[in-house]
Image (cartoon, rainbow, N blue to C red; front, side, top):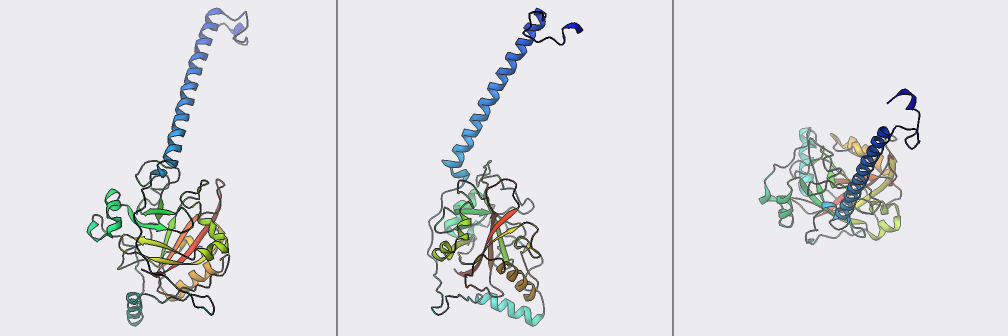
Length: 311
């Protein structure tokens, strides 16, 4: 194009005919691509919405629940004190006598393919996805979901459903530094989940900010592949990443009783209300963690600490 026409608009009468024709052709192609891109984006959004709502983000249907034991508080104080299981007490006693740490240095995980050791109600799901390590149910919420674990790729399920396909809500997952091995469990099991605006995943976990909700739902169930479990809520807390000297999200194990007590006390100090539940050294702990709210790019966290009180 001649230099004299470069500053002319395409709809100017003096714009060269051939250049004007080419410009309009390019504009039509650009408009077609925009329409195709918009249609593809709408189709993808519709597919993701359908997957999230109708197909529950790729999560399986809950298996039939099994009966669990109940836990009674003392009538005088309302406080609950639960002793460690017999096997745990024996292990602690041996450790004290021999002067060795009571928790493993590493977090071993069950070998894959051992479906014959898996509880019958979870065997079919485990065969569908060998990353499954348990199932979490919390009354008064829609939390009735599988929990997975992927050592070596901790956030593999951050945006994947249980079926392995993309899902905005992801799947509840156990931190790779935790072990559910019945013979060598880590002191604290840390489970993560998204705080979804539609209430899915851990979107309703923050209901435990309300003391009345905790009073109505002081216990919940979390089963591993190998053992059923009833859990008593110990503390509900809000915090900010980097704000605590001993943050809950770095607590997986403890080499000594003193370290364990320091970790637990640091969490209890942040509790939004007093539950009257005091864990004892040697009890299995479970922490459920999510974002403090649904605002993007937030550093706030909400967590629920619980202690195992029955099978």
